[in-house]
Image 1 (cartoon, rainbow, N blue to C red):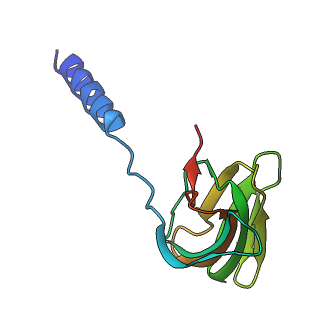
Image 2 (cartoon, rainbow, N blue to C red):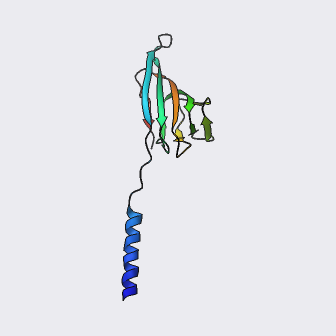
Image 3 (tube, one colour):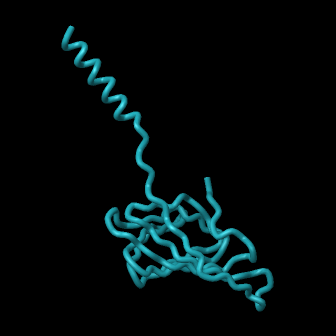
Length: 134
C-alpha cells in the first residue's frame, strides 16, 4: 500500500509540475524617435523607432504594411518573413521588409545579452507601426 501511495503522490506531483504555465518570453521595448510627413509623396510618412530586445525576447507574428528598414545597433537578432530564410544579424547589419511581408520571426538571438536596433518605416500617413497576424 505504501508503494501505491508513493506512486500516486509522485504522479500527482508530476502532473502539477507539468500543468504550471511556462514563463512568457520577455517583450521588446519600442521607443518612437520620429514621424515626419512626406509632402513629395501625398498620404505617406516616414517613422523611425528604436527597438530593444531583452535577452530571450520574441515578437509575435505581425506585418508592418510598410517598407521597414532595420539597422542593428547592438547585439544580434534573428529576422524572417513568410517564404524567406531566417537571418541572424549583428551590429552594423541591415534587413528589409516589404509592405506585403508577414514578419514570422523576430527575436533576440541571445538568451543572455540584450539587442538594440532602429527601424525606419515608409508607410501610409497615420497607419499603425505594427499589425498582429493570426
